[in-house]
Length: 295
Image (cartoon, rainbow, N blue to C red; front, side, top):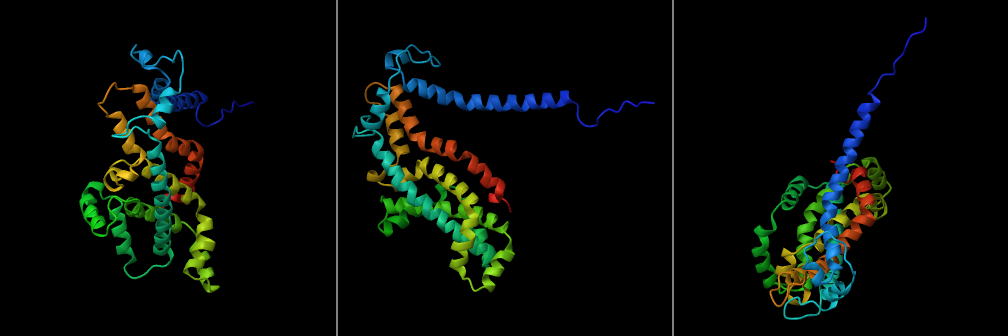
């Protein structure tokens, strides 16, 4: 006598509904974040007469990069009208050393707190952890006084030190959590073989830390590049980052407000973080999955 055996498990219809729901949510999220980007791009490619027609989502009839050229080299960022390119290079000069040194210090601190515990290590880590969540506004005035007294206020060195100070706690937390997931026996064996602190760090720890280092670079680069408050206060007039100059362009009240130039300047300011996310997004996910925030 034959028996009708029905396979167990969820019904295909339920799986299809769930999958449609997930894809629908992802599609709606993508559209929600893509609309502002689309509006900025198409507006930057229009002339002012076409913008005044008020059709926000319409494609430009005669696309032109004139607004991009003006935003880069001719837009007024205050008393000077040299465009936003000076702020771009200022941001590069500020971001590169700030990212390198904050990640280096965070990695060393995380390594020391994970495998070279000393008396009071937990207290030091608690202080660093507390520092990661202190609002900028709380310590801005003391930092101004300190940098003024040591002669670094309004200088490139001063703004780099500020970014390092604010980035070091979260970088320490990030690297410590990652190092805690590595096998401790590996480091004990290296110590038995006579390897010291720096030899283990550079020859064993850092080669194993590529995933978390990628995560740290993405976080620090985007955070420092997009910073406005610290750059405005500590960088000084000659080192103002791109975000400050963008604000000066957008908020200017002299003459006609050129929305296409404003949108082009915004896109030029955001192009570095956008490029980092597009190029390194998959590595960011891999770094997290590899234990970057494990602990």
